[in-house]
Structure formats: structure tokens, C-alpha cells
Image 1 (tube, rainbow, N blue to C red):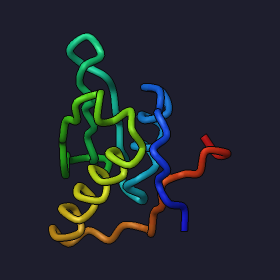
Image 2 (cartoon, helix red, strand yellow):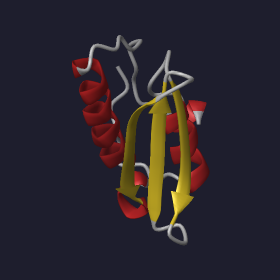
Image 3 (cartoon, rainbow, N blue to C red):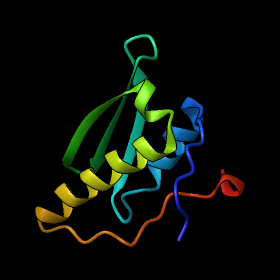
Image 4 (cartoon, rainbow, N blue to C red):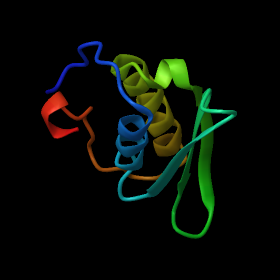
Length: 94
């Protein structure tokens, strides 16, 4: 299992990580408020399941981003959705 190691992520890396964290559902992430907020929306292709925002300063630290993702995954699964297992990508795969 890959353990977060305190890496600093770029906006692009954080967006890519969010995009793959909720499979088989779709996730679209983007920065808002002049790059100070990272917003992501998880859908089943037709309807929104979850929409959350993370301050960009938190999203740029992989351990914080992982914590936010795991909480969102838990909330989605509590609504009855089955997500595929997910781990934070290693530095080599970013």
C-alpha cells in the first residue's frame, strides 16, 4: 500500500488524482476562486452524486488530499454506491 509522504502536488496533479479516485463513477475537478479552491463533482453520468470543495492549500498536500478523498468516498458508499478500491498514486505514477 502506498503511504502518503507529504509530497506537494500541483493543481494538475491534484485534479488528475481526484479524477481517478471515484471509479466507476465520473469525477470532474477544477480550480475556482482564482486558484484558491479545488472543486470536484462526482456523477454517475446523468446525475450529481457529490460535489465538494477543498481549499487549494490543502489539496496540494497529498496526505490532506487523500484524507478528503477517503471522506468523500465513504460518503458516496454510504449512499449505496460501490466504488473500486483506490490508493493514493505513488510519486512515480504522477
